[in-house]
Amino acid sequence: MRPRKIPQRKCVACQEMMSKKELIRIVRSPQGDIQIDLTGKKPGRGAYLHGKVSCFKLAKKSKAFERALKVPVSAEIYDRLEQDFIKVEDEFHAGKQLAGDDDDDE
Image (cartoon, rainbow, N blue to C red):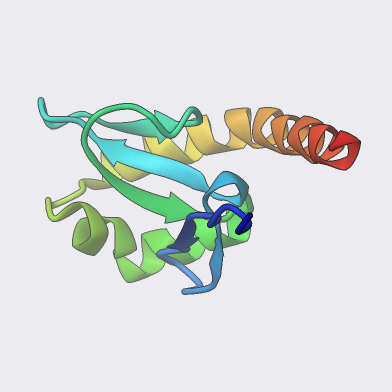
């Protein structure tokens, strides 16, 4: 039996390819809201980012979200996303650790 293919995504800031589970998704919903999606399942156009503040700051500086989400992103949205990103960073890393522990059992 062939091993399952692991979905790969590219960080919009540093351009490094990683598995989808190791990145945080920023999503632009069909209504135009831009928010963090830890589940990776919300509808809309997504951009992926490492779970590091340094990658977020690089994305902000290079306007990577504007290119990836194909809409202009105001400074207020970047500031709100940065605050949300800092809040969910620990939760994301904890979830990643739990997922890594589950993979070891198999």
